[in-house]
Length: 235
Image (spheres, rainbow, N blue to C red):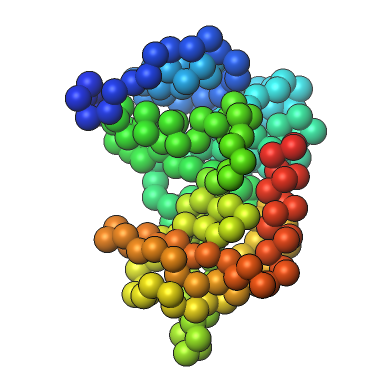
């Protein structure tokens, strides 16, 4: 099911593990592939097949990988209500971003698509490893999947799925047609952040139906995003 390609994406040199990711009920050969990918970035993969909820409540992990199935909800609930793990990076395994939306209340950060391929898995771990390792740059982007409601200046309403969020804006995916500079009002909620409304505009567009929105610097409500991100990182 997996494909290996050393020419598509070169793996970095392995580093000593400084963080742990729990692989919850992940079967072979996916388990070995993910373990190796995380190892390349100094993240130790821990196999977890029993007493998952109890272990999540008493052990410290920086991240976890869960199959996007109904049973995952109870584990995510335990993670987000745990004193030590409530800010961990949650990876979904399998399914699409839309399927991940079913678990949006738990703040799924990113999704490994199946069938899992090594280059794609490495790319996703590379993109999120700074958050797992708590090595933050000044301008941090937090990967998180949640539904975004958008209203254009001409009152057109549509939805999008977030990919990353920062204090200045966010990247999203939507089948709706947008244009550069297009004015929007965006609305969303993030874990402990109640629903918020912000003025924004489209700042970039890509052919894969993703685009970026930049929050209006004159909209004081964006300070709530800054405060939420700071609290998220400190947690």
